[in-house]
Amino acid sequence: MTEVPERTVTVASKVGLHARPAALVAKTAAAQSVEVTIAKDGGTPVAASSVLNLMTLGVAHGDTVVIAAEGDGAEAAVDAVADVVAQDLDG
Figure 1: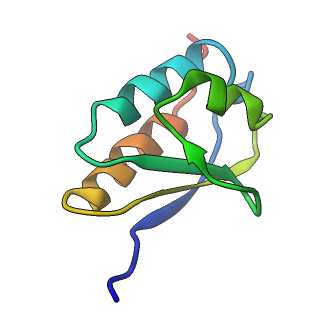
Figure 2: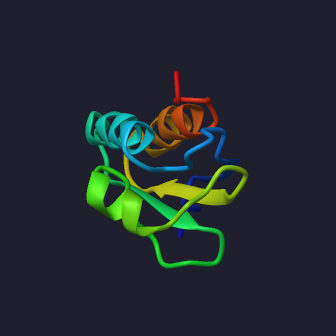
């Protein structure tokens, strides 16, 4: 059994994953070749490509999230989404 690539990331945006940051994360996730999931630390994973899913997680600034994906290109997909989450997207 192969290991599922995942990364734990601290949310940098001051509004958390809400509105504009959620849209940017969802856009990045949707552009990947595999489905990317995101979960609040210890929570249930949801599709990272859905703005609504991201906003329902209730992730705030400084919270940690776990980003994961499976399949060909999963590691690159996880890295791409993690890099967006780790940026301050409020500007």
